[in-house]
Structures are given as C-alpha cells and as structure tokens.
Image (tube, rainbow, N blue to C red):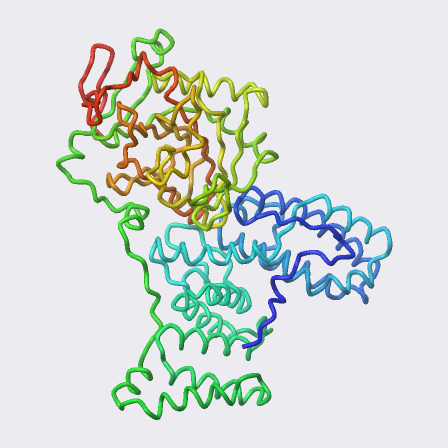
Length: 548
C-alpha cells in the first residue's frame, strides 16, 4: 500500500523557515495556547494582504474563513476553549500544519515582499508543529477512548461526556486519527475512526478527504483487526469503481475473494453482519481514572479530615488542613497548600522554562521521550522568582520535613490527552535504572508533595492502583505521601499514575524531599517492616474537624 504522509508535512516551507527543530507542541497545552497567539498575528497579516491582492489570494481568504467558521467566528473569545480541549487542540494543530501546507506555495507567489518577510519572521520566532505533533495529538484519542470508554464517533462529533460541546471533525481530521492508529498497528481503534471518517465523508458537501485513500486504509484496518475478508473485499470493489488504476486492486481482490470463497456459510454470514466495536482496555488503572470507588468500605470509613500544627509556631494561627485519603501507607490531601496568586505567578513565569518530560531508559542513565509520559516540565530554582522561595518554605511546614536538601520545585503542564503512566518516585528500583540519581548526601526521594495549580474540567486524576485511591485535581490542594518505608526501603505500594486529561488545562508542581536532614521528624528505623506512625491517632496538637 503506497501512502505519502502529505498532511503531516513540516509546517513551513523551506523558503520560509530554513531551520526547524521539533518542538513537541502536543506534549504541552500551554504551547498550544502560545501558538494560537502567533497564529492570530499570522491571520492579521493574511487579512491585510488579502485586501490588496484579492484575486491572487483566494486560498488565503479560504484559510481565514475556515478558521473563523471552525471556531464560531469569535477568535478573541475562544483561545482558552481551544487550549483546554484535546479535540480543539488537535483540530488547531491540524489547521496550522495541513491547511497551511495547502496554501503556502500560493502565499509565496502572491504576497508582496514586505508581507513575505513578516510571515517569515513571525514563523521563525515561534515553535510550530511538525509530523510528530500531529501523530502525538492523534494517538492521544486512543488513550482517551480506552481510559474513559468513549466512542470514537462521540469524540468526532464533539459529544464527549462531562465536557463542553466541541466542533465536529471533518472527514480528513477523523481520517488522520484513524490512519495514525493504523500505522501504530492499533487496528481496532483505527477501523472505528476510519468508519466514522467515511460516514462524515458521505455527508460533506465539500469533500475534505480523498475517497480512495480512505477506503483503502479502512479495508486494510478491518482485515488486520478482525480478518473480515468480506467487508475488505466490498471496499476494494468500491475503490475499483472509483479508480480502476488504483494500486494493489488485483492482488487484494484475489486475496480477499479467495478467503470468502473458501469460507463456510456461517463464516460468511458472520462477516456480513459484523459491526465494528471498539475494544476498551478495562483495567484497574482505567477504572480508577474514571473515578470508580474500588476502596474497601472497611478501610474508607476510618478516613478523617483534621487540622495539624506539628507543634510548629508558624502553624498555630493557620494549621495545615489534612484529609486522609489512605491509611497504610498514608496518603494525604493537603488543602490550601498553594495560593491562587502563587499558582498563577508560577504559571506565568514557567512556560519559557518548559521542556519535554522524559523517562530513564532501561540499561541507561539517559532520559528519553516516551509515549508513557506526555507533558512538559521545568525545575525552577528560587532565584527565578521570589514566589518559588515562598512556596518551597511552606511545603516544609506542611509536611513537617526538612526542605534544605529537597529538589528544586518541578512544574508540569500536560499536553493533548496528557498523562504519566504508572511509576514510582523513588530511585531504588529493582532494576537499578535510577540508582545514579541517589546522591550521597541527599539520599533517595523520601516523600512527594504534589500541588495542583489548576482545576481540570474532566480527567487528569492522580491514582494509586495498589491502594484503590483516586485524587481528582483541586486547585490549591496537594497530595502528600512517603515513597520509602521508615528503614529507607522503597514502598512498592506507592505506585501511582497521572490519568489522561480529557478536557481542561492541567498544571501541577512537585516538591520531592530527600532522606538527608530528616533524622528529627522522620528518623530511619532499623528493620524493614518498622511500624509506621499511626496517622489517625489524635494527638494533642491535632484537631479532628470532619469525617471524609
């Protein structure tokens, strides 16, 4: 099967942007938001040029019209909507790649010199999407539909449960998603998306997708998913009617025809009646991400909320607000862990420092990009802004831990369907992958303080599969847990995940405390299964305020 990935071509022609570096824009929604500001400026240039050269810039006017139509003609009012919706973000990325590609040659021919220079300068100053961004944003939909049991048809028509209605996909956009999933050999999901693309194609007045290409990838995906040779044969016959010269028609007709002819009558009837049904990975992790309550009621009834001062004078006037989310090991939710003003300041200064989050590869000390982690991160030193120092200081008070050897504050912004699959925060793993990150004076990561700097419209929970705990983001709150037993051994029960963001902008910040300096409040014990301090014992400096 011959296929050229024209729609995923580099966003700018070589004459406009000679040097291009992959930007992984799909990995961070804030990058999509930044890109939209640049795109708005580009639209302004195109509008001005179109006024001067109406006849030559027909495609430019169509480009603007398509953008305005897709986003309700209210450009200034919809940037936040686009940046917080995986569907709109994907459509937007497609808009500034594929749609721009179609008209770029015409732009070069028709834009006067000063306008060409303006476009070249604007696009060279900003990071623009490439093929990997289209791929990353398209494959995100498979992750979302698997985790949250969403039909591809509902996504394509903008009917995602728990989110605002979004513009429907064109046939081309649905094809891009299905085609990418077929390339990744996810044939079941690919078949469903390509079927949706065909349905949309049949209703489009102005066709956005090549008919034969769509039918070809649909037959290919269906056959590799379920072995339905009858359906594949019928699709190949449709292709032959449209274009008898299309590649591989004789071979495919012979292959599929032979399977159908040699099959039993029962097999033929099954293939004729078979309907494409997406197969979901309904595992424990996905159930927790959906918010299903899997915790044993005998355990959850003992969870309480209380105020804590740790006998710290700093906390006497405003104690720490704690909610027990799990008893053994202890997992806390800390409320008012970061002020709105502090979170907004960090989100303002953070984007310029962001880079693609990586994972440590097996048998290596190097970080690599991974489909198991879709976000961008930055480590912010206190010298970056005064707010970092203030936030760091409070994390020490709220956890009763020594923050002098803690890591720099890490911030995370999640991308299209952004998530971080199940992982540990400690470095003493059995394979020794992270051992080189255990510093002699600081030790391993004894505890994690995960602050939510934004609410998330849908999805994006933090889940602990071994504990049946789900924590949905609440702006200003934090999740707090110990990664190590009191003797320093890793606590394998702290396996956790950041679930895919279905809708909204997810910002979090991490403060990882190291073992060094914790001998007063978290002393090391002598044997592995040392008893943990009872978290639900009410001490003299603890005030129980509610039952969770």
